[in-house]
Length: 559
Image 1 (cartoon, rainbow, N blue to C red):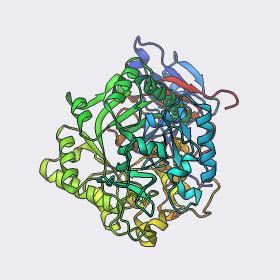
Image 2: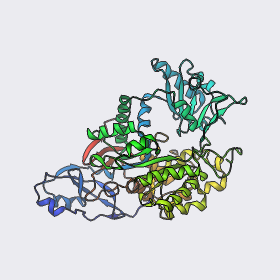
Image 3: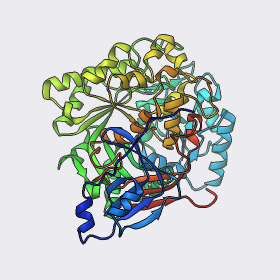
Image 4: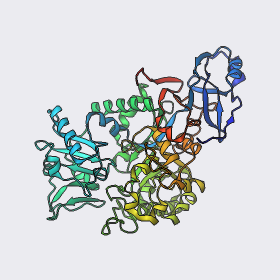
């Protein structure tokens, strides 16, 4: 069991004297807790927290706080552990919400198991005109190839069916869906996409990256009613996991409308930092009045843009400088040429938006590093705290450029433990040295914003903390961790999912730690992460979640 050096926090109460003598409503004191937070850049412990009107007044020794706030309403923490609300810097909110109404093949261990799930879902939902779902992974199935349309036809043939791969970068379609989309052997691969084909050149049933758009254009769009249901479902899920903030990586104008509606109605129980998808039509509409900052008491922010440079490693769409080690004819897919990338960046930066770019392969990361460098020379924008999302495989010589260009590495620890079954096969023993290189990136002073990329991975932030510290799966394998030299310490991981995630969203003065003047976003959990074996971090359960001093989730008996 690791021991962590913690500094007990002196009572921090910037407005203590004023608050004690004012006529404001009585604050709330949460006492008898084992609390942890970053304070003045150090990890500290405390036994009491005082807040009023949604914001922290004081943190420190509970007995001292009780004397300073004698009229405070007392909440007994019962000796439980209290932490700042956790923040997932990168996910897909509506996608995780839609998951509840679609067929899920996540975690299936074989093609046959996935087929059975799809068949059962289709039979149970006879009125659904188009069967949709997500979560398949041919690597886990040990197919050695992508699944085919004919294999999906076995489960459902009378209606179109499309299932997104677990990483969202490939879609498995049945024959009916391919026919409705008009995809034939004559259909060319789009730029940044690939239609998988059989030996005769016919579409085999999987569309990679931008080729998925061929299907999307004929699929039925979601209604606003469906979006509201999805967002409500996602918010309830986040509360149960202790997430008080999430970054939504790529939103549409329709989704922003729903977000603002929820925020206005005080239904947005998790803070959302939204990234506009690309700089096309939606951006022109949404950016007309400039970035939206701190909307509805910091519940919603719209001040960044999400771009895509390449695909994903699992579907071999991640763009590499040299061919894949397990597919020598393939270097992956760059979505844009250099001039297009730079033009998009300049458009967003000039309008005052942070630019966050998905880049997984070393070629994609280099392209984006080059593009930021060029953009800064032409028009500035480094102050926007721009980010590279994922930054999974980076050439060793390119890693220092994150620091020199002032970029944030928005990384997802569970990607490493999910990808370790194939990552080294894809890139080989040399390139893997620059992959999932958290410690190397932190050592040079680059900020890592922690996330999960839900629903690609579980949104549970304790899974992320566990993966960051141990680099093992939940069974503790591999025993020493997968490339343990790049593991984070627990304080580093904790910071990545709190204060540094907030920094990556320009919100470190409002959230991310429990300090006077910040929002009282906190969670109560069933075990002390700083006193247990790191192998048990993922087992942590959230008992309560509070946002702005209001309880938005409480564990029910039996949960």
